[in-house]
Image (cartoon, rainbow, N blue to C red; front, top):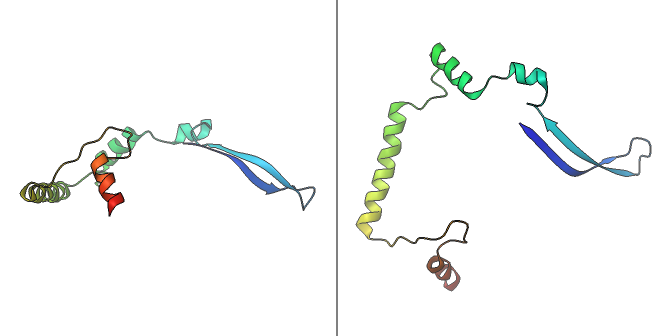
Length: 104
């Protein structure tokens, strides 16, 4: 993980009334000691699997409930015959829908 924040202000240690601009640059994975002791994602998954730790994995009943919700939502959508508005990636959304929001 790397975090870089610029334009922070702190009090100058020598002159109490003066502010000094600083930058924060933190990189946990850049420190060799942290890279050695930090397991990669797949290592964590395999370790959890071997230990029988199910916390990092979806349970089958959770997956069934999720898909049941999605399928019910789709069924209601198709039953109502609601229009499907498409739009280009990166745009402000469907033109028709934006106009209806502006009109009221």
